[in-house]
Length: 345
Image 1 (cartoon, helix red, strand yellow):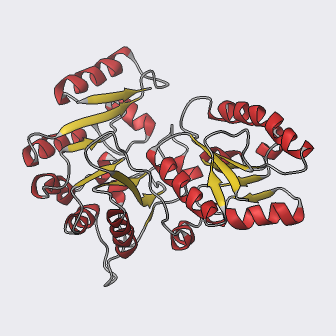
Image 2 (cartoon, helix red, strand yellow; image 1 turned 120 degrees about the vertical axis):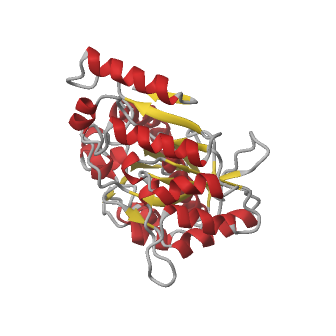
Image 3 (cartoon, helix red, strand yellow; image 1 turned 90 degrees about the vertical axis):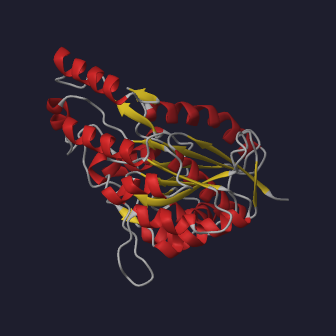
């Protein structure tokens, strides 16, 4: 009889991608997916550290799992509980101290070891921890088995993680500490995954990265490939109808990528480009490495390359030290750019 797996995912599209890959790993080990945790033999909580009260949400979930795990034990069986993602990376062994329910804590750069960790829990009856930063090993180890398609549109959409980590060290962000340094997959790895997704019916490819436009994976000849060049190569694959990417940093918005929005028909006319603030003083406090003027120049180039482009952004309102004048400069930037949508925090 197959064992049952339940996965709960918090956070961004990259966490959704990671959950799908963890699902692939465990399906290959004989598990089947269940939508409810009550009857699961294994539960994975894939966490996000960016959102407010991330740790509290995790421990609330763990508290709700306690009676289900106890029931399993009373029935002579076992429920393995794994905490993955960025809270796992940030909290580490502290999770074991706060919750006896947890058997495995695994970081977002080491979840390829999950089957081995499960085996050790079953054999050794000991809690397992792996927080190593090894994205190259992760992607080399993963095999694409499943992909959740978005059926809300006419096109089946699939996520592809092409870049992970961040070297920017914005003062408000934990990503460099939970996802590690910037790492880009090779062009061949990405193209092979896209081809498999297209063979499985996907028509829209969504390229993901913490700073996706910092992508610098290697071509087969050993030269560095920009995100624009990668998009161009993906656009030439039969079956690919649409291409999107997220999330970008203004500092890495290179001219060839801006030009790609006007020259590659399959690249959708939309860009999410977080500015965070319209005030140079606040941007400096945030260590964003771009100015208000830099952002306006990028937007001007984008609209010249692709006049119909839609834009969205992220904003942090009330950042420590922000004045009324700083806030009004942000409002002014919003009015000038005319975003399609915005996320404010």
